[in-house]
Length: 207
Image (tube, rainbow, N blue to C red; front, side, top):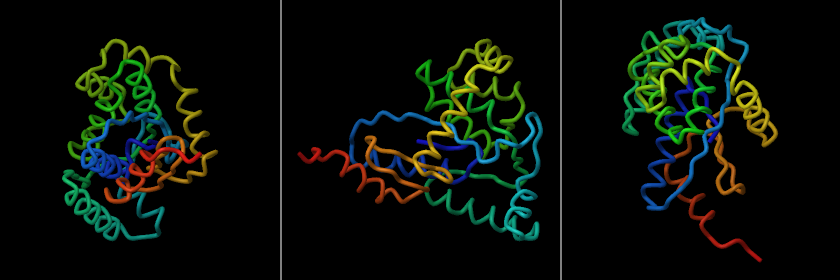
């Protein structure tokens, strides 16, 4: 599962995938991969999301606000609580580095969910290292270890490699899923679509 931690469709896509897995009652191993929507964003800084949306899509700030309101409604329909008014965007490489650490410690899914909820529901910062350490600790990581990772360049190469792998697979955006190394699913598809793909993956391979 390739995603960015500030991508509203990624949180939604993760929830829909989980709904499909729950419906089928199957055991799956989820591997979280990093994908930065804007790796050029200066680290340690942030800007209001509404301003970025306005510039990206050539909309007024009021139209950007309406886009955010519609996203909140979509999320609510899938049981997610988004509060996007006042949310900021920034560089997510440090958050992704902590997700790689979390994967080694067996708590990647918990950390990813905590980061999503912090950003989209609680409007807490994913761009300030003290905030990231606090959130990571709440999700089960050791705070001192997380702080040490952020003070170094640990997992920088892994984050970059994840992005390169996604592009090599043809992904131009996220969320992007590869199931059983055979089936690619782009975007926050409905649970029904994920269910169909999972069923195909469960079928014995031909030959």
